[in-house]
Each structure stands twice: as structure tokens, then as C-alpha cells.
Image 1: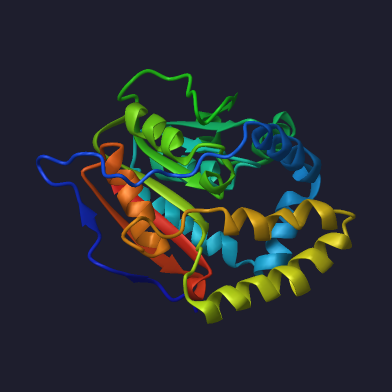
Image 2 (image 1 turned 90 degrees about the vertical axis):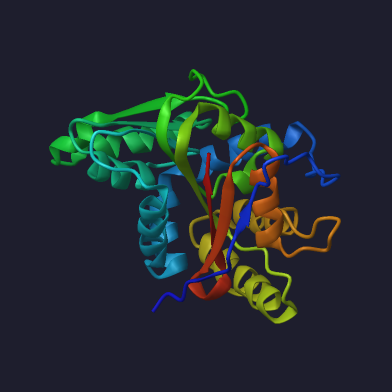
Length: 268
């Protein structure tokens, strides 16, 4: 059973101005390192996700797509699409009359996604186009998409603020972005469980695939993810504040997977 909880969310006041909250920026070299990492794990990425989450990641991804508000005939984007799980779910939502673009910076991940597309029989999957690109410089015009999803990608970009700005720019007014990722809990007990699982489950399982070093990055990437702002806010409130600062009208964060995962939903 997946527990989901939410608070009232945040809304941007009519005269909203940028606060002194400044999201952290990491060295540019991290982007190249992460790109190389995801390229190395591409061949076993899907099977590892199934093993490590006991298949629960499929439920979380369906929830993320549902929260995006994508519907029949829409033009939608799956950002940092990886091997395409969210893109395929979006394809089923928008149907043959819709359009799905899956964008990622890893050629290897896109190759896996393309192979999966060609091996599947659903006609709607023909509406997916795979694009190699940078989440910080999206190759699309303003107000282009009816919905955007992002699964486990925001945590890995080198500039959270810029990535959110780009999503806001290419999203149509009144449309939504749905961002699924690990939840950086400020609760000591939850955080300790998450760290224990990474050290004693994730890394040992990945080691069986020869990828222990690659998966050790999870702990540091979660630790470097958004935590408290100058108000000492919790992670979900910081993520909500970030969405408001780049211009979204309202934002709400949902804790799922017993609080180990989180999903930010923001409306332009």
C-alpha cells in the first residue's frame, strides 16, 4: 500500500517577488559526471529499478503522470526521460492524436527507450519522439506543452532554479508540471531509514550488476537535494517555494512511498 499525504500547498500572491531564498548551484563538472553515470547504467536501469523498489516505482510513475493533468490530444514533455517509463504512460494518456517528447542528455538511455518503443505494439506509442537535449536549455518555444513530467531528474541537474525556469517557459498557461523524485526528509528517523536502505540494499544489489560505485552517488545526491530555506522550511516547502519563485501560480508537494518519495505538482 502506498501512502500519500499532502498539505495545502503554496500559492503565489498577486505581487509575488523573489525572496532571498537562493537554490544551491553545483559545479558544472557534475553535469558531465552524471551524464556519464546514467549512460553506464542504461543497460540495466529498468531491471534495477524493479528490483530495488519491488516494482513500486511503476505505481509512483503512474501517480506522477496522473498529477500532470495530461489528456487526450495534448502535446506533452517527459523531461530527463531515461529509458522512457513516464513517456510511455503519457503516450497512453494523450493517445494517437497527441504528441509526446522524451528528452534526455544520455544517448544510451534514449537508445534503450527507442528500442522499447519499437518492441511494443500499442499504436499510441508511435506518438513519441526521443530528443537528446539539456534540461537547462530546452530546444522548444515558449508555451509549447500542455503538461510536463520529470522523474528522478531534478535532483541531478546542476541548477535547480534554471531547470524550473525552463519548465515554466515551455509550459502553457494553466498547465501543470509533475516532478517525481526521492523525498529529502528532515525527519531524522526517515532519513536514517533511507540511508540504511541505500547502504544495505541499493548498493549491494547494484554490486551484483557491477555498478556499486555508480549507485553510491544516490546518498550524496539526496543530501545535496533541496532542504531548508532561510525560513528553515522542510524540503517540500522549499520545493514549493522554488516553483513559486520562477513564476508558477501555485504548487503542492505530495509524499508517497511511505515518505521515501515525493512528487511536486505546480500549475503555471
